[in-house]
Image (cartoon, rainbow, N blue to C red):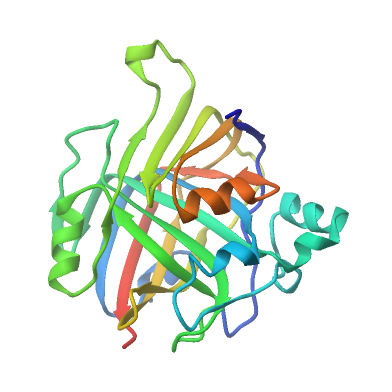
Length: 280
């Protein structure tokens, strides 16, 4: 498989008051996070997202029962690359916006307990798949059918609070065994291996001081949680390089079927939090 060439794209913008809020203003947003069990990242090593479009014919294998995808044509503020794709070919207007994201930590804690980072190339990480969809009970316009971590130090306390995260593996940075000088990452979960290899360049354009995403994590049929993810400060980096997707399964099929896969701005430094609130 030949990886797709990528370029920087903007974050998804505001999606109606009842749904998703991005670029919610400033440190106060983090301070007002709702009560619940929280992963607090005090020093972000890498925060990234890969945008794509989900074929409705494949979405049924990814969306939890009771959730219906929202067509891209009905989601404002999408990255320019996605909007150009369905502007140029109307058949993609009915496909659903999807994202694979991850946050890795140099220093973090969960429920107040430190999470050790003893392997810099394999930092503690949470990652997720999200799809624009309607359903659930908290009014969010995104569902996360997959939420994963690479360490028991995050998984165990969440599991003790009935939040079940699946396994993943994650590596970040140049590979010293291959004499690489460029940056990169490899995330493996849900049967997929998602990689990016290239260069980061600090974005000099002003951006929001904080990004907030509200969504629903649906694990199986009986459990769902409201999820609030807040990223504050740090350096937004433009990316140049190659994205690769390999493996088997529903996520791989959806990523490969997408007419476009875009790696957006990558955050280094700053803080982040992931808060879980029981929805039912």
